[in-house]
Length: 335
Image (cartoon, rainbow, N blue to C red):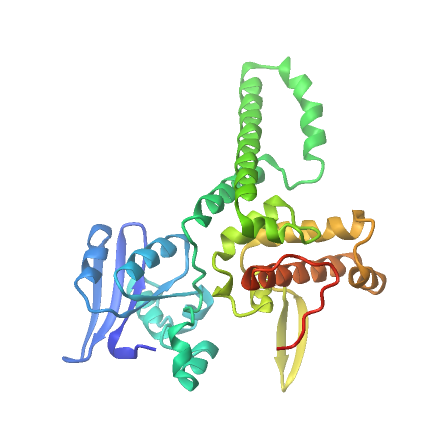
């Protein structure tokens, strides 16, 4: 941890950026508002510091630019910032809350304090680095997801209904035919994106390695590699499963912990692909494996599906982190 003497809280927006820090030489509390064009220029003229930002789509871009300047960037989830917002919500109060939240000591910071050598290789909490090779595939998956959601691809009976209404629309009004043509073009765009993703899958060794896992096809494999980026950004398979939202929520008091349904936090798209893959294995595979078969016998289908998806996520992380290929029936040995 850099210490509060060199910490800046940043609340980002489209055109206006609100900064908060304390000048420890003068004791002045600084609340500075910058335009988008002045933001990077300001940090180019500062000594390396710890910059806290609330995680969002734009934050990833600014984190990469600031990291390239030599600063340390820590992205925080909104839930970690909200408790520190004082008074009415505005940009200035948000920047102060981020400045406070980024200095809170989590489990990772405590480990670094007890083992100073660990700080040199630990990744900042909330950051999953993406290499340049993974970003194009990630963009393709996001566009495919957007088109598929608009087309109702995730709804049961989409393909059947599309085939049934094509004929009547062909003899309808010009407006209906134009709308139908637009729908068909979007289907063609989805098919083009899927072909592009499959080509990337064939060229990427990591994707082919994890595609050997039952239930993980080209879409899930490329999405996992693109979203995870560097495997060791997560410390374990369980942490990756939690990142995808496949671990139970918890509630407790008085020392008693109660497990609820899955958290559904993290990346919805990847979680959906893994759950669909797990469901396919349990309902269509001739031999799902002894673990999945026994689980299905004693648990309801949906519970078994999520449990298998969790296991798939852990296996994906293990194969990527240790650069191994999938072996059915493999039993890991304790270190």
